[in-house]
Image (tube, rainbow, N blue to C red; front, side):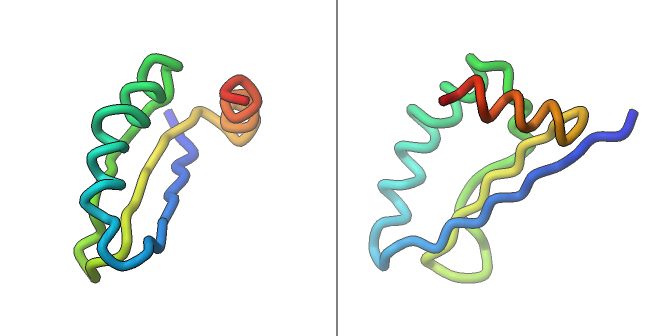
Length: 72
């Protein structure tokens, strides 16, 4: 089965990554999981202190679009 993987990269203001990570772990990712979004991985990017990433998988681009529409 082929999947479409979306990789989101966030460049954060200096000094905000720890709080962003807390909100992602406690609120954002659990919400995505409740909406049956396939969260592949997420966390602080290892290449610098101001980046964060979120990876989600979908069966197709159409499925991704429907998921985005459902979350609005």
